[in-house]
Image 1 (cartoon, rainbow, N blue to C red):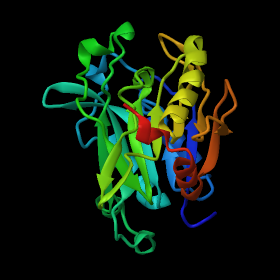
Image 2 (image 1 turned 180 degrees about the vertical axis):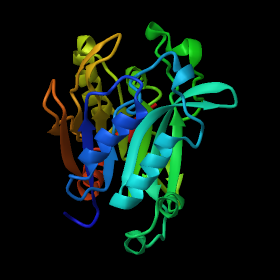
Image 3 (image 1 turned 90 degrees about the vertical axis):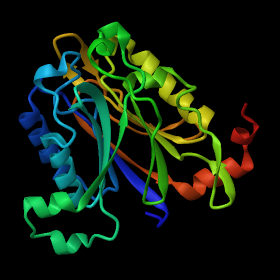
Image 4 (image 1 turned 180 degrees about the horizontal axis):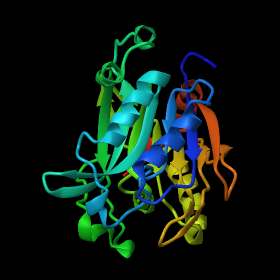
Length: 281
């Protein structure tokens, strides 16, 4: 792997309805078998399934699922991304956490450290889902987030989005911003964590490709499989490059994982050769 590349791994699993302990344990078992990677992406509400009545399962802002993500991020020396139902100040949020080891932490020195020491060595950035899925009633209990979040990890900038956000291209629009005196695209990749049902899987596939092409960025889509009380899911998790080509994908209808390297040199060369973002409205 080139030094400026970043390896992403997407996990596509069936979720056990409203069972945080078993879901985290199953994801943890899979994560422990993975080859070295820089980023692991999990589906929407991966610890409970997509709930619209979160009163009995929502966690606090520093809940057990977030602790689990922190521990695994430090243990595996990578970022872990996925959304969780969270209650904060009497409101519910579909909260997308992006968890990483803290900058400057000596991961090797923590190998034999305890649980609390590893938790304290992790950082978490979060995005609250903006487009709540009215069709399912998500808007009745959850509060929409009001701003986008871009997080930087190992030289790449990721826009964090959740499921239904995929249908709204304006919310995902890559902008030219000034950073360190240089004009450049705001982000290099979009992550969509989702519980996107089988019946609308064609839209999922089409829109992931469209977001990659129109924003000249990589797009990472992590979906689930299996059933919940309302829907069936068949996956379709994939990683798409800025040309709109799939560079990794999970098998449909089953638990699987896929990985790809994001190539920053290739991305920058494409943007320089074909600078469409600079002509945007």
